[in-house]
Image (cartoon, rainbow, N blue to C red; front, top):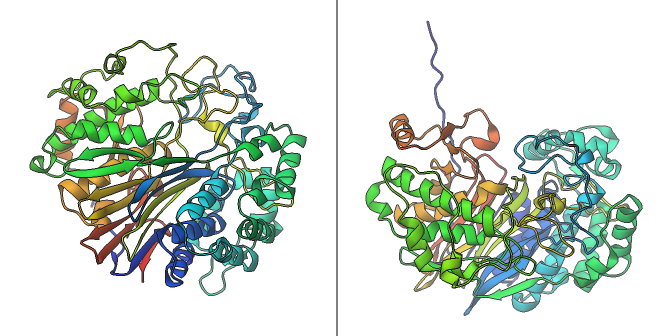
Length: 569
């Protein structure tokens, strides 16, 4: 007798509140944000406290050694604080040697000797997290920075109990942990995996990081970017062949974009970050989709998925061809984000899939590019976190921060406890391409923390971790919320697709007849296995979201297969 396995489905309960809501990837980080709201702080205070705390308790994914974006609405002020990682001034197109082998795994880059662009001291870019978080607090925070840093300091010094996700993350990165001494000393004390026993869990402590966080709370960003901490970071990096300098740290400044990148989608305003990130890709996807009556097509039908996948793939082609740091590359942002360009690109979508390729946004710009560079095909990453906050006054923050890969570079400069990013992995190591390495350049990254606004303020705060999967995840959640009136937990748990690879990844719960019909239209599909944790129930990224109805109803959803946690006052 053949036994047919049953499909068991799980979902987390949706959190609700009328006074304020915090949703992060860890219960302790969420509680850090709530502590700020209870003390009279606003959404920015809570978001910064949660981000510092989650960098302690989720050290493989985020921390002060990384960078990100904070999309905000505080009273009448709305915009984005950008603090992405930046290439060091000594970085250049010849800093890596090649093995001569083609790319391995999911990477689109040629193979570099010793994986020096992926891990180790040469993979470290200038971190922006401290500068950006402190800038947001200086502009909009209410509570003293020292109070905001206090929960993270407490967690790092006293320790936090290991849970299943910590142990799972350590297991995934065990090779990196045993390769880099300081990383192993902190997170595998005694060279043993911490116990996640519910009755007697091990405490993970990082007192040196506590000292750094305490100094940041006391002195602000200068404590990190200048003086003894900066010197300790740079000394260890340069003694081991890295190129990060004290000048890189001292010169780092975050972006502050009033208004951010805003566009209309089906009657609402969406705000995402600008420049060399996934914000423009998300905007292009939804601007293309704006021309379809998605709601009338029905959720996850053949027509709806054909429209969405076509729009997402067109946006990705333009992303890889054109997007880069606009201070180093001539990028046609105005053309790419124009309504007329969206109309021209949308007109190429028919009943059958054609060979998707990049468009020509220079037509809308009325000019030719100053130079033409070869497209770069970047890789995905898995070292990112996301958090959302809405306070009782309707102020809101969507914040994504990343180390890039799991535990970033693997490097913890001696005496600091700070896990450093491997942001150089975002760059194309081959020269002469749109995303090639240049001194002080910002690499193209995958973050797109979003706010959706209506006439009475913020309606949805949403974002995700998951590298190249992020933009498709965020745009689908916005679509599910606006076009199909889904609550945040329902939207997160419902099946999604992903268009960031040469094929379109399909959640196995999408009807087989629909998948067959999409294949008949020319779509190349791959149904992802249900037994892969990273690509199972909440497929293709790990999101959190908070929805606001009226002035007093807040509802939050988080990734079911994660330690992510939402709670309200």
